Image 1 (tube, rainbow, N blue to C red):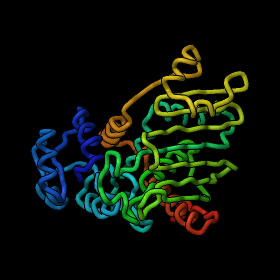
Image 2: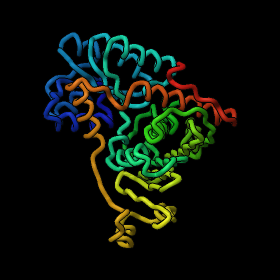
Image 3: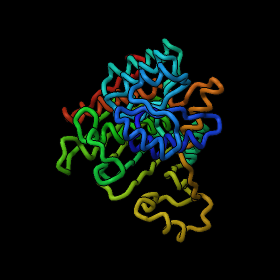
Length: 344
């Protein structure tokens, strides 16, 4: 595992240690003292201060890249040169040129490049996608995704790169998750985007952004991302000509003309209130899971069985292209065409 910051310690290390098919060999961090502290905490034997040192001294099948976004490209390309498969935290990179180079390299080297879009691994979101693909909802014409968190400064991450132009802001922190989810639900890539972003706190980067995304066949995606909440809030409204879905990591609610139509009430109500008000409502159920563990398990399974990852490098490039277009859209205050990753 390369990088021993918050996402590595909270997510990747425990998940690999919980997977019976993986052996976590070593940690890599330029801050070797921090890496040694983390290694002692999790009883990991080996620590290195550089990627080259790791590969020169160990036989490594795969790496998790948990470093700031501006280092992703160089680390991933080096891992490919050494013959390793890669799970890289999002975003894929901070520039389109780097993203394209990474995707080309994964194809040329025949190596897996999976990007950490953990939200795909919530069971409720996976079931929602299956409902769409089966046609249960009719023609899905709109998907609205809200993903709101506390500012990293007040939350779990104190790293300064979150607040540096080029690596930080909600457009690189949270928007990639939303674009990936819209792609996941629509099973296609966007064609155009318009956006509005703002900075409410004293910061050089945006802390709130709303964007409208056009997809083929007249479909619309709406994304709302923000660092202005005191708690993590995420939910998705899926509107179809036959039925609608309201889905979150812990709730799955389907409505039609014979059921409850006012989905907006669920936004205003707490989960406990829903449980009290609708204890016998068959369309409503709760379900929780650890998406990070499921993500790591899936990555390991893909490598063991030679499966192609659903969180493909091409999709990650599409997300990066969409984020880049969104920034241009709110800076120019106009709608920007989003080229497909194949065009790139």
